[in-house]
Amino acid sequence: MSNHESGRRIHAGRFAPPDDLADIVDCFWEGAWDLRGQHAHESRLLADPCINIVVESGDGSPGARIVGVWTRLWTRTLSGQGRVRGVKLRPGAAQALLPGAAGDFTNAIVPLVDVRPAAARELTSGHPQPPSPDAFAAWVRRWRRTRVEDGQRAAIDAVRLIERSPGLMRAADLAGAMGINERRLQRLFRAHVGASPKFVLRRRRLQEAADELDRGAALALAHLAAALGYSDQAHFTRDFRAATGMTPTAFRGQV
Image (cartoon, rainbow, N blue to C red; front, side, top):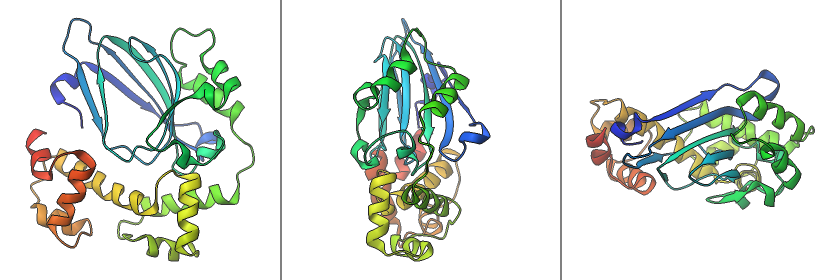
């Protein structure tokens, strides 16, 4: 969801985790830019409900940070020169590396040193550039909790069920599929995901919509809304605008 013209001046990549970390890591990723003497670039993202740990160098905000689940449209203006690398944790896996509830980090950017001082120092000490994916993976291995709690496992399983069940639309149905009551499901998601089940279900649908629109799909918006489980186009448009800041029609017009 970035400006396509300026986005060509940005390098981005992602790397699959090694097998021994695939239970908690979605991917390792990187971005680099050199916009010295050029216009700034606005990056916009309808992000997954994941917590990221990132390390940045350059003209922006250097250092190691925790970026919580972002329930709004993620926007950032890049200028000058910089590089960032990160680990994107699987939804529900935050407590494998971080203390406290995942909800404590929602819509927040927190210096890693404030939460895990020794781990932060190891990740950044003596390195002018962010760690490579291999070095990041080694760091995760050293600092992850070896014991996976039942609640964390249940939260990870619940999000995976959402990802592989396009027809799953309601939190009550998700709770039923998990064999727990809805209140228990809400507590699990706050502790381990950082967003409500309703939000995660809606975000999945809106990401599908954005992907369809980004591909230039000719599907009528009313049909797209119905395919995503919305009762009417107005409800779909309201959710899409709340998440992205624009209507589906406006979004389609800019891609």
